[in-house]
Length: 66
Image (cartoon, rainbow, N blue to C red):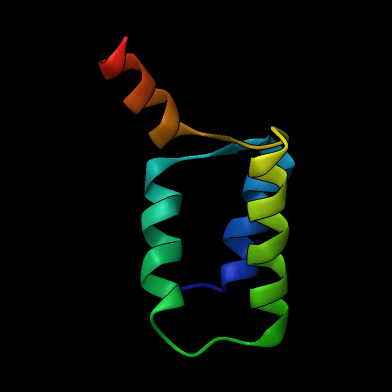
C-alpha cells in the first residue's frame, strides 16, 4: 500500500476524490503514518470543505437523495 500523501496529491491534482481513494485513505489511517501524511490529509480535508476537491461519495449520496 502506498502513502497517504500520494492518494491526497492525486485528489488535489485532479480535483476529485473517488470512493476507492476514500476507502484507501480509511485503511491507511488505521496504521502508523508519518507527519507529512497527516498534514497532506488535513490539506485534503480543507480543499474538500472549500470545494477545491469534489468527493464521488457525496455526489452519489446526493443522487440517491434527489
